[in-house]
Length: 105
Image 1 (cartoon, rainbow, N blue to C red):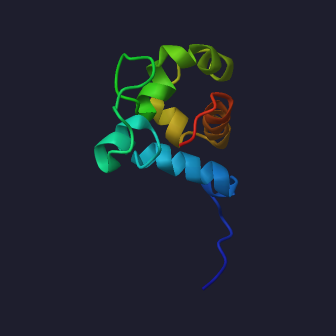
Image 2 (image 1 turned 90 degrees about the vertical axis):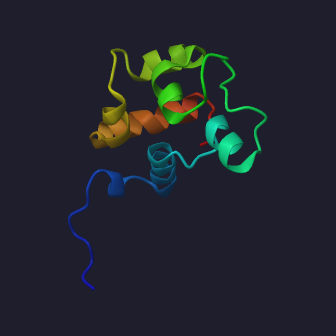
Image 3 (image 1 turned 180 degrees about the vertical axis):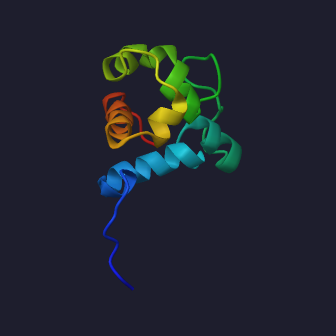
């Protein structure tokens, strides 16, 4: 096999960043919604904010507990698609947000 010479933005990121993004993209993560429904390891699928299930979409787009961190990383509204599949800069913003919010995905 020949080495891969043309890498996309995702594949130029660190392994930790790649893992976090894949977990957010697929929904196979450590957020309450998945941990409750799939493994019964969380008492409830609901986020600590109490408004809706703790999913990747909820934490990246709407969770009021993470508004401050979200506005620091994305000052203007950004679509979920861009946060998960955008340019390297957008993907790095997403992983920075996860880290600064103290979330383990």
